[in-house]
Structures are given as structure tokens and as C-alpha cells.
Length: 276
Image 1 (cartoon, one colour):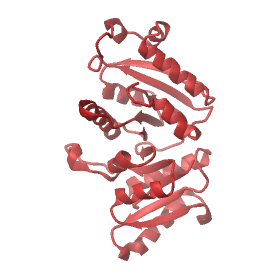
Image 2 (spheres, rainbow, N blue to C red):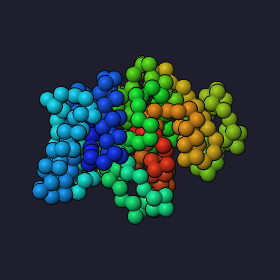
Image 3 (cartoon, rainbow, N blue to C red):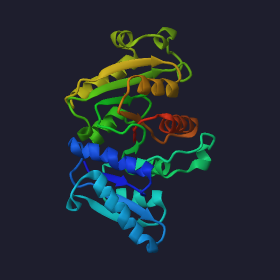
Image 4 (cartoon, helix red, strand yellow):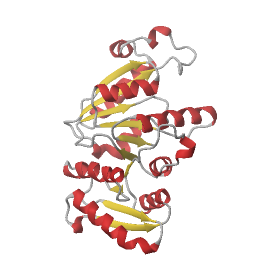
């Protein structure tokens, strides 16, 4: 798996490098990663070289084993172009901390723009950066193709047999459609699977797909508001990586799903992987 790590030299962007170092050390990514830094003007090349030297030091690799790139322009646009031209499988970026009152539409952060337009999955590295041991995979069942299909197709190398993976589905009355029985909105994981409800079938399918990747996942259902339940699960069980899906739908569904993904990305206090 070829990864691209973006850094501007600031502490938040160096978090992406530290997370990438863990991926490299555990054999979850190629041994020749690409590190890109973006400058606004060609007169800043010396500054860029210093940033890249610092990046190689953080990765703890010989310079010959790291491909470094300096691009000139807008940070998000150039990171996306590098991901496209380099045929990368995964992009790592850091998240700059913003004032809590800043709205999404005023924010326009580099990380969010990269997530929205990158040609491959993106990890936003933040919070407690460390080795991946516990992964929370949040499958809503709404995306097409399914999140697990995309995850298995694009990121199979990211997981190891020894990883603890929880597949989470949140049952929310707000999103319940016609024909969904009230009892199902209160049922636990075993009940949903045993009764072969649509949610139970989703969990069964996810477990079977991950078993094909030689891992033994734990299916789990929570009841409540989607964002709140994902955040609580991530914190209570201390996962090292939260995986969510996002896609571009039409009309109200696009607005709803984009908003949910945005809230999770901005509120979760640990690395989050967005699979589009």
C-alpha cells in the first residue's frame, strides 16, 4: 500500500508523520512512502527542505527510503494532485485545532478539503497517536458500495490478524424508515443477528467479509444518535483508529450524510479514516 503523508512543519501536521511511522513499522504500508510539503511561493524552497528533513527524522528512515516532494500552490489542491499523480492508496494529514464556534462553511480546512476531494481514503491523524491495535469500523449500511466492500478492496493491508476490530452499527429512530419495527430499534446485537433483521444481515455480512481477511471482528449495536454513539464508543473502548464511510448522494441524503461525516471527523478525539 502506497501512502502519502502531508506536512507543513506545524505540530498538527507532524502527527500525520508519527502515525505514518507506526504504519511503516508494523508493515501496514510500503517501505518507500511519499512525503509532500506545499509552499506558497518558490522563494520558500529552503524552508520546504528543512520541513522535509524534519519529516525524515520523525519517520526514522534513511533518506533513500523516503520520496520527498515540494509543490507550489494551495496546500489542499497540491496534496490532492500529488495523491492522483502518485497513484497513492492512502493519504495522511493532520488536523489544525479550530475554535469551537467556527462553522463548517467558514472552516475550509486543508484536512477537510483533502477528505472531500482525494482520489483515495484519507486518515486524519490527531489525538493520542500510537500503534494500531483496536479499530472501530462504523458501518451505517447506507453507502453504496458498502463500506466493508470499499475497505476490503482498498485497504486490506491496513489490518493484521492480531488486531481487535469492532463493527459498529447505530440504530437511530431518526433515520428509521417505514416498516422498521419498534422492537428492532431496541434489540441488541444477538437479537438482530438471530432474527436475521436487515441490520443483523448487515452485521453478519461484515463479519464474514472481515473473516476473509483473517481477522475475527466483534459485531456491536448501539442505540441513539449516530454521532453521539460513535463518539462514546470510541472513547469508552479506547480505539486507536475510527473508520467511517462517506459518499456523495443526492438532495437531502447528501446533506445529511455529509453533515454526519463532518461531525464525526471534527469531534472524534483520535485518528479517523474516511473511506469514500
